[in-house]
Amino acid sequence: LAKTTQPISMDSYEGQEVNITCSHNNIATNDYITWYQQFPSQGPRFIIQGYKTKVTNEVASLFIPADRKSSTLSLPRVSLSDTAVYYCLVGERGSTLGRLYFGRGTQLTVWP
Amino acid sequence: GAVVSQHPSRVICKSGTSVKIECRSLDFQATTMFWYRQFPKQSLMLMATSNEGSKATYEQGVEKDKFLINHASLTLSTLTVTSAHPEDSSFYICSAPNPGLAGIETQYFGPGTRLLVL
Image (cartoon, rainbow over all chains, first blue to last red):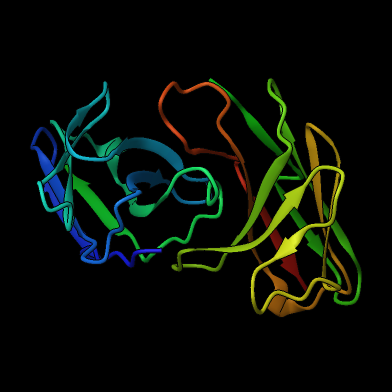
């Protein structure tokens, strides 16, 4: 499984757009990129998943450059409730489904 | 969306006792579930894969006799921490593969169980 590197922490203010970048230099051809959000004392929650280019849902956007060695999670107009730890995971779908190896994640703190 | 529940949400026990944690998929079936452990200010660590109708598979370094896993039905997996000690105090989280997000393969996580061993 490809190792991921994320900033340990980020700060933002309400209403701003937040971009969290994840490096995964050793990503394999069959690997997908998935982001999870975790609040204190709760289980992680799926945010978004992508393979290449851009993916957007009602919560976030995921930008993946052509070389796929990094990805950027974009949270539009964050609010205080977006304060959480965000994890970037890279792995092959199918056979490794469910066996997720979490890195340290990025602690996002949103200030009023 | 799919929901995974855990019971209890928190438990306090004395050292040397055993504690059972349940993980249920409420509106879908899961032949496979996963157990994670998370210490304060740390990331989740995968402990084992729970397989319905067969033995669980454990990650390297996880004692299978210490953490007993039983996947008795398509909606229930249990993790029993045997002869618990203070160092077993942690946040235990289960997950199950999502059943219906088209084109997406991901996990639904339970709310977690906080275990404190005195």
